[in-house]
Image (cartoon, rainbow, N blue to C red; front, side, top):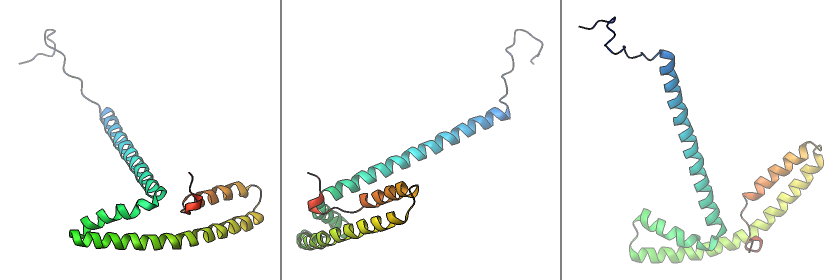
Length: 148
């Protein structure tokens, strides 16, 4: 039997108020959301770097594609050799088409940029230039445009 007036007994533990309980849950939710945001941003950065790596070394694309096809299609050794030869041959042809196509696209984009720029006000031109630069960054470069 406990007597609340007895000085030798420890005091009753403080009760957590409902406002503190909500604060703890809110903090937990904030930490969770921050973790998700950091994870998503990190994943996006990794994906972007991998894509940039592949695009900066287009001659390695066939060597990267064949192992993926081998795994996904369960190719035999003989099939893998045949598919590798086909991928290399077709990729070379695709590169030739791209090398013809990319300069023409770049020319058309320069003309688009110049013609639209002539219509815009001085306030609109910087935003247009930024937009054009972003579009150009996503275009593949031709072998002659690649930095050394």
